[in-house]
Length: 369
Image 1 (cartoon, rainbow, N blue to C red):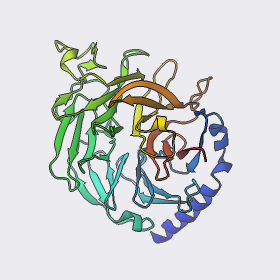
Image 2: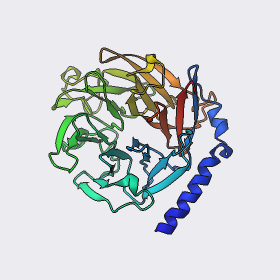
Image 3: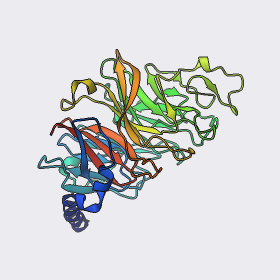
Image 4: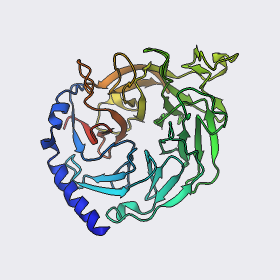
């Protein structure tokens, strides 16, 4: 195992040094950013790169739906990760990763596991400890996003095991939290079809989460949602009502949309908003401070594709009021898809790191340097 890890490290170091030689310039040249910003490849060779988490020493951990969990490091601070490690393999869709107190937490379909003292053991990862092992095993919307909240608890969600259905059991379509040791499991909210991205607004500490709307109601229905959760017991409408005002033609029955929590913001339909972060770094201009950066993964079943970009949702007084493109170009004018942004985090230097599960890379967005 140590020999394999050593070989992996050598190949990863060489690969990072030559990332620019692998044709990424053709993609980067298509991307459009506001004046003063630039985008580069932070790490490549990270297949199906999904959720990102930042360690205490600057290690970037990367979940996937390919069974692997990776870690990449930029030890010399030049904006390019020169080292890559494979933390785990053959896991069950380990999309979600979170870091706290030296430990890496990984969310699989059915469980959460923990790798202790991980930044000191990247080349020889420990056997993981099982934190929680009682999630449903459905793969449909079963991959998870994982974060630590301001209260120190682990937050995740269990998606609906279908496009549109009433699964019956309260655990489906639910936002949940638990202690880091797996105790005190709690369902916080229901009526959530599939959230794979959330963050806490910096002034109110309210949890905002993306929710991907149902398919097969047409190109423009229903809008995808940005929702605000503030107290246990809230219900956000799925599967009976979509985007606050659209009764489901199959399942609404006699239920009224005004009996559910309406979205705080409505996106365009099928753009698939996933990872999101309120910007708290000091590198970007003041107009971006505490604003919400959202990775739009892109539509898969729309006549004319849309999404495939990073947007900024503008906030004032703790509430969203506007949305504008920040990075576009992964979807070309001819409809070719060059990449699919998946998650965003703020690096230690205030740059923005963005995963792309189509290209298997992590981008770095910097300002003025």
